[in-house]
Length: 482
Image (cartoon, rainbow, N blue to C red; front, side, top):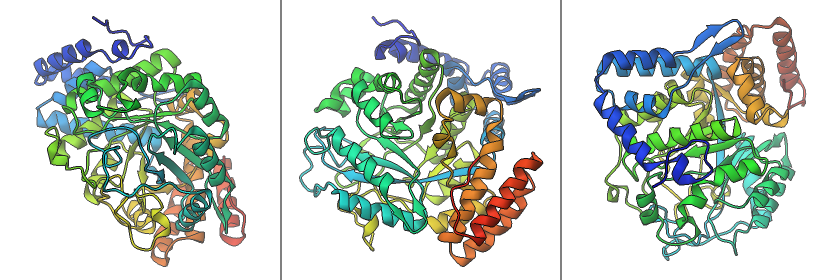
């Protein structure tokens, strides 16, 4: 029997089934232990020191106790602290991105995804490089600067060479004032050599959802194809880091397995990355299973309510305080509004989950990976964020200035990232307002920028930001960054 060891490179040792079961038993036993819960909450709360704000984070066992907690006032305290942590390290900024689906060819048999090999109803499509360019121009014309590229696993149709060629194409497109400045990659688990190639291609974050950490469920949900190999998939982030990619993104698809099990596994994975590589996940995504072409989410009997979903999000924020948290257009405007307060720091906007969807006037549904709940335009999303007190940020400076991996985390942990990110967010928002925004969004945005400039603590930084913003508004200069 495998023994739990967060420093091990073996999947069944750092995501240990027996350890998760013991954790869930401990959490159930202590879910109404007010004294213990208070001590965990106190540990989680951000503390101000001479060098900045620090946050201890929580172990998977401590965080699982909070998730299981049934005391309403303690749950409210979880939400309160989650918001404190979010504001302490990420301020009121929300990073915006869009997914770009390159190909829905796939050889896997994943039972929850419409791209599975046996689905003969869905048209199969793979973008040519000219089509990639057209999609990128459409995304640039919306105002996007950051993409997450997606592709099914198919060594014949979607080899690593195709992905690398697409990345090169995306970075090469300069349309009007548009540039894609960061390409994150969400593709199947691969080799150390291929991760090195992705790193050399200039990717941002490598994202791979575990889907489920429960091995028996994983094998049933992935009955055929290379993704069936649980260990190879679960150990992918270690290979990515060995290949030089120091920003990796985790996530599970909530609703496939019991959420408390998935939550414990997710936090254990973050602990493992920290223990082995000295840096935890750059991002954690919180998707829920949604309707798609031949996928009925009610077929999975572990679906979670909006209330539980909110609590999961808040508890992740307490457990892994420095990670970026992502919520996609899978969720409705109402759900996204609530979760922004509880720790989410990145959202997609104007998303289309179909291959070639951005160049089509009407939203296509025949090649969608999942049903999009929030169908607002990017301009609507930008205005909505500002109306709720959030700064929409199109910033990609840290990645291009080499502030990745442990360098980013060090800046984040001592609070210095705020001296870069806040003015960068305001400058990239100004670019969006000048180049793409509606009159209504411009009016809201310029008022916000004027107010937020006053909040920059360092006078020198504030003056430089003010001058750069004047240049963006009055000339054709772009891409200023701290």
